Amino acid sequence: MAELKRILLVEDNANDIELTFAALEENHLANEVVVARDGEEALDYLYRRGVYKMRAEGHPAVVLLDLKLPKVDGLEVLKKLKSDPAMKSIPVVMLTSSREEVDLVASYDMGVNAYVVKPVDFTDFVGALKKLGLFWAVINEPPPGAVRS
Image (cartoon, rainbow, N blue to C red; front, side, top):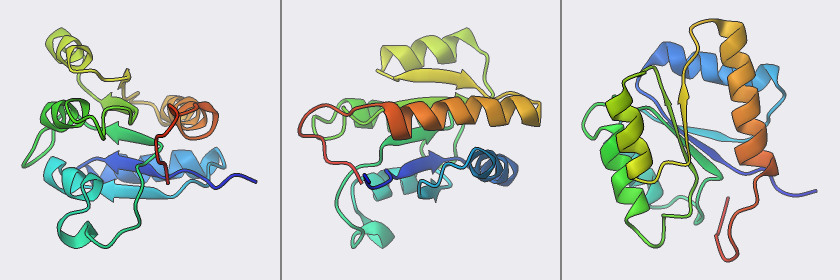
């Protein structure tokens, strides 16, 4: 059986983190989920810096990225990843509450793979995360040579 791929959740809202874990659990997605609570921590994780310098090599199967983050916002994290040849193949899903057209356009201009507005209703949120998790962490095939963990 193939090893489950890691998911990087970049989210500063404790309630949204809890809902995400509940939704993944309810959908029996057993992937390891690493939580970064701001954009700087997400970049430290991805680039194996600071407290993450000793983590195992490899990239997550998908980055679920909030748009509005402290320290380094989601668009800056996205821009950094998609401009780096070693990171640009990592799928990034903007998982946000923003319905602003400017955020949507900017995200796609910078190379986001998907833009999902967080549903307010828990049942809808569970359904959305089930689809996201199944596709990006289980079904999606990374490009040849991409190291995932």
